[in-house]
Image 1: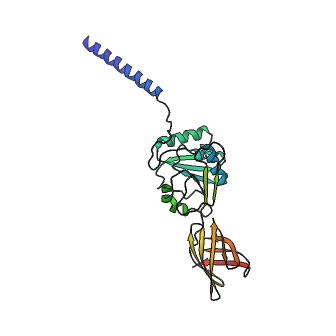
Image 2: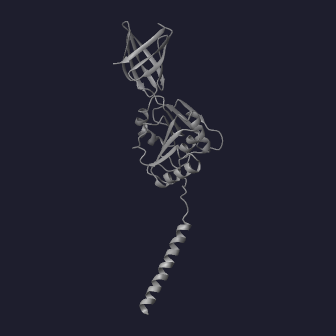
Length: 271
């Protein structure tokens, strides 16, 4: 009889435990991020919707683009890009934020275009991206800058608020609407790499590059003329004396047109 009583007592205790566990499971609320919550490298502050749209407008995102966000938070940049038809990927350290982003992408009907993974943004492979849309501090962006410069020339980088040390934005504009303190958007075009010496049919072009700015000399016929110019992706423009050279860079070759001076066409090959 005592044994039966102990069995019954154990059964009652177990039943109460099962009911309590089920009740707690039902009461558990879905994860909701909190503005200012700490992360591995930055705290989470969401980019206002109006600013997200301005970033994508400034980058001229189309269905042909592959957009990436590092420290993607709740995924809003990538989801907004996917709504425009682009494919994209967000890299986020916080697993709860990754799961939230995936759920929000499903709810928005863009889960087939918007991918979210857990990972370290500094270790992320961004080589497939031709648009980077981010909200990071300058110290984070500076660490990532070498990776940005290795992207295909002409790739676009749009950033909410903060800049990259030494790299002047090609365009800075402000979002309209409800964007609070976060309305400024910077656009950078990844420049082709032209630093070095280039052989021309009638001379030699020596270039020194600092992001999209170029300086140097053009040596022809025993004379050396200072040059100054700029890059927008693979498009290069520079002046030498009263001549303006415009053209495109294709790896170790570039060519284009000359206005003023000798006029006509020009070409150069990297030495």
